[in-house]
Length: 143
Image (cartoon, rainbow, N blue to C red; front, side, top):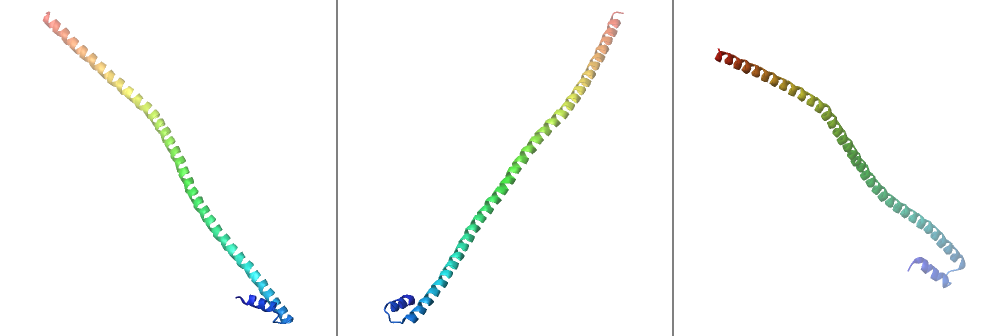
């Protein structure tokens, strides 16, 4: 049994005079008052601790999500850069292929024409040579 309950029981039994009962009640009231303040302070501290604990975890989760989104931003940026690089490489390749392809086509046509010209000149020379030889032989035979 608690001492306050014991004192209260004694007060109810009228074994203590009224003056002592008054001061005992006043002491009990002061103790209750201070206990009330300690109770409020205790719950304020507990509330602060709970608030700190929840705040810590919310902050921690917010940081994790933020960091994840930060890396996700880099992933998205990398995908965009990759797209632009591939598009740029495609356009560069089309430009190089168009430019040098046209140049090489032009060069190939020039070389082809040169070969055809050589071939035709050779053919004309062979034709002239064999024609003149045949003419020479014809003249030799018909003398």
